[in-house]
Image (tube, rainbow, N blue to C red):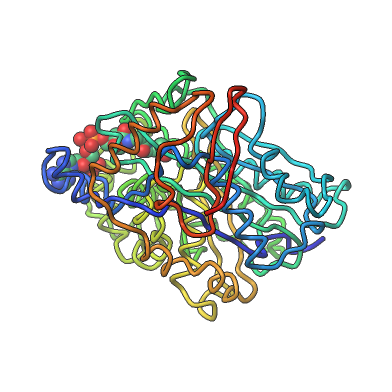
Length: 454
Ligand code: ACO
């Protein structure tokens, strides 16, 4: 199979969100702390009527319905999530109910887990399957989704919720390129050891630095492999040009909140200057600081606020053209954890017309605390207008209900009360579920979950 990539996409998100400006007032913090400090506008949330299974059912059934996909044409489903409701039974098995009626039980793939990175592991698995000798000729679906909720405190405004389903197959309009740069290490920046609680243990400042360090390292690994490939491809005598952000038209980053993405883009520019100190970009740095930045240790550079500010300001125009078009979901929904990066891709397809996207190259940075990260690229070769039309993303985001912050706090209290409980009927109102969507109807005395549709 050639040109393996994305054939179709669907996004699911809750019906309600709150405004981060309202949350600043509600929490009694200084004005601008969430809206400017974190760069967030809204945050989506569900109550106890929704869980990761209902999220995934909605994303996948939406994909199957909107594109009239024959359930028999699917040979693999990989799910990435960190919103576990069961330590053994996978979300993937719940999705099998969507294929049972068609009699398709021959579907490989299962769940992958590591914070926000599980979706990317799932995606790589699906691509590898299609490119492998065990491929049976059918397409794959990759599902990502999470309910990102934090205990009260500075992390709470960085929550969010949503899910994404992507149809993967050959001859796609968006094609994955083969080089991946990956960085994985044993860190304790973000983890969920307390199984009775939905909330993560998060060392906020450490998670921010780990994200950036993993970006440095996966980007370097990508560049080293890209250079090797370029040397091989270059005609004898031609010097290959090293990869830089100039080589992509759009740069997508896992988005816990807008400010982190602003910093990530700036950090990539800093890496480009380190790799090529004679570049035009390096030449535009103020002279006294240039030497300080270029000679700083990685550890020092990661916490150097002046360096960060300088590269953010240097990269303003680049951010506006390469990154901003991919931020619609993040700004409205908040952090969707595993679905965040794929929400960026959905946003890009929804904000830039297909005619302008054809021929363009996109970089992707996936990060999950703990930690796992990859940097890779895609090429848009074909028409994406059908995908944008079927997702109808901006219109649907606009139709969400912006509700008072008390509803958000009450919803989290309901989730806390009913998390891991047997023999209960969720208390949240069905009015807060989109018409036609799946929701959690009940959990019986043996913890078996039942889903129904509005
Ligand atoms: N107006 C404008 N800016 C403000 C204001 C204000 N009133 N108050 C604070 N700020 C700015 C700060 O100056 C700071 O700016 P900087 O990032 O440019 O330095 C920024 O807001 C953050 O403020 P801090 O006091 O540094 O941090 P805070 O206590 O608000 O916590 C954090 C932020 C750590 C991100 C927290 O929300 C958190 O733990 N989030 C969850 C973890 C997370 O998302 N990590 C990111 C990667 S991992 C992942 O995807 C889960």
